[in-house]
Image 1 (cartoon, each protein chain N blue to C red):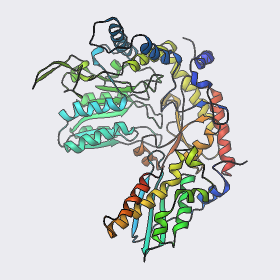
Image 2 (cartoon, rainbow over the protein chains, first blue to last red):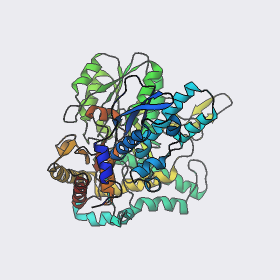
Image 3 (cartoon, chains in turn red, blue):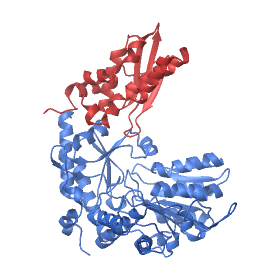
Image 4 (cartoon, helix red, strand yellow):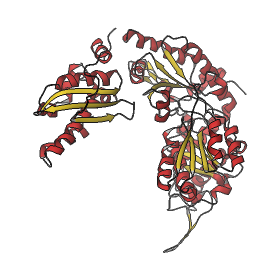
Length: 148
Length: 414
């Protein structure tokens, strides 16, 4: 039986998510939650030479939220901050075959993108401390605000 | 009185939405009645009729349709009084809903009478609307908010109330008559009599109770009582706050504006009589009129029959659901102590996923924290699924829900 959302990839990814846990002294720690369903995650990152050399997440989430968070952390681990800054939601959704969610389920899309929102907000706070008042920063905040 | 079961086909015909097909041509099975109920055509027609035939502002003009509108609006106040056995119609204030009713009390009574060091007692199974207004108030006043906890059965541990009352600092005890998550029916008689003895005021959140069981406000003996129309076949955006007259008379206005005044001068204003003092601005006339039809509809069925139908349905659902492997049901098991609200979790599948999968079969259940995060923390869960029943639900609806849980097991290989 095939299901438009609950494919084996998603269920497996959510059951065995990667990078779950916490970091001891993270450079970035960002919590976010979805007040509607109770999805609640914290994303933590360590940054060395503009590269995200470690990333962990912790919290509670539904299958979609967990699977997407797992994929997101795998995608950006070891990558440059610029890569993470510019990451598009379509890249996460397509990894899991969830592209249609954006159009068809305005409610469940929030589950899928919660971790991305935390990522963008976390990077924003981190970079805001480093480079005050830069234009590219404003975009990042807008990106996070307009994600859903 | 006829049983609901014997007339259920006719009842269902009154609700146009129950003919609706959703998703892949599946007949809608609506099991989210604790959230809001569907509306019978009688309610929809009453609203349309007002707009089509006598739309006018009330309490102001002398022309014919204004008189008709005022009469229709005020007649609903009488219907509410009769429905809940309230003897003084001026104690009934129309508000937007339970939330506004509670906020009105927190603002117009609480800000006047709650002082530093006072205690307000609420419970662990309250809706956010019976927690947050009190948090705002106690923070402003330097007062304290305390909680009556629940036991493993989902019932209030009332001994804890004694402990708080003994401090002599409690000014108000607030509680819901029926939990919107666990379905637990509070022992209101006991709580209110304890508070009376201690000279403490009580507020009852009856949003879940009034739609589903016979309630007698006079007998209850509380001081404040709030509920919403939309959870009892009526429209959204309208509800009732009842306040004991001796208390209401001591309260300052909530909103200032038209209709709530007697005379306005440049620097001084005198207030209108009760209840108008608390109904500033043009009210939600159409929906009050629609609400009147909802009360008529329920009165015709009889609240004893409504309660009996839901108890039978809840018993049926609890029996069937408790046989399913991996299901955890929250709240009392005894249907005489609970309403038709069943919160549950299924294996380790997140409620949001369960709700999405059952929705494929056209079944609407709620998933989430149900505006009761304090209770979720207590139960140590992030969320639950919740199926809740009303007069148009059948045993077949329950069967369909249970069948669709099978699909969840299949997909998640449980």
